[in-house]
Image (cartoon, rainbow, N blue to C red; front, side):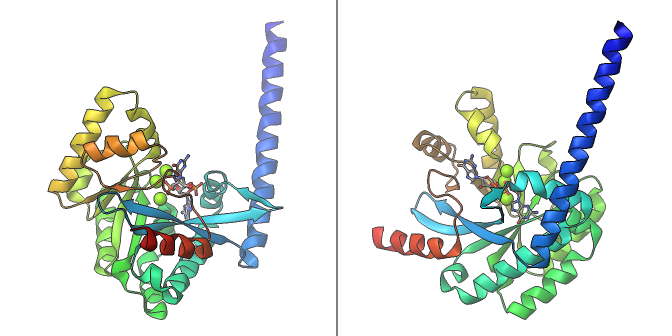
Length: 278
Ligand code: C2E
Ligand code: MG
Ligand code: MG
Ligand code: MG
């Protein structure tokens, strides 16, 4: 009977694999169809400086509508990374964002972040591509911030360093995204040419309950300040979280408490209302 149970487990495993494979395959094809018609959208989420109450930046976030629903990036980005489609995704997002900056005075006054997958950095000459885009759209590179995740970036630290130096040489800002989720090594803060640290939402949530975590984050914030790096906390959903991070010395925040990611047209309204209310 033990053998039977094992057999069943195996069958379920195989069924599972087949199902996963089928879904991945379908998603790749659907994504390719969207890419072929240049159909990805970009939403923008405000970053707020709570000491002045002003919107100082936005993060661009890719949006894929499929049959009237949004496909979560957390689901399709990893698949696009595996298939190599992330190159095309990243290029379409960057074109859209640079075009939006070019056409939108509001965005020209803000720091605009773009998420860049480590696969984009590994698979081809991203710095070259970015440089020519910036020239084509005549966008001030200082306005653009590239958000890079720790995972996949720091495996080969030497080559990463020189790659990041090239991106910095273009004039862009560099951020470490999702800080605190990977094997966060504090020495990166000192050795890599990054100017912004984004503390992950998972951290933000835990702080409510975990005193030691709070101390740790407070220390990270003060280290970053000493290194002249900005800290942004992500995933702020409550007033309590705003107060807690303010107390820890961090002013720059992003989260549903302030605003959700939204289409450019809505961001323009949001920006106007902010000016009127201050
Ligand atoms: P991320 O770069 O850390 O982006 C922040 C994510 O947190 C976004 O999810 C945003 O909608 C969400 N968020 C912001 N504030 C809150 C909040 O208060 N509460 C909660 N629950 N969530 C909040 P989104 O748009 O689903 O994106 C998920 C991830 O997918 C991003 O995490 C990023 O890693 C990736 N991604 C999104 N757009 C792109 C893109 O254009 N290129 C690449 N390579 N990756 C992207
Ligand atoms: Mg990000
Ligand atoms: Mg993040
Ligand atoms: Mg995140």
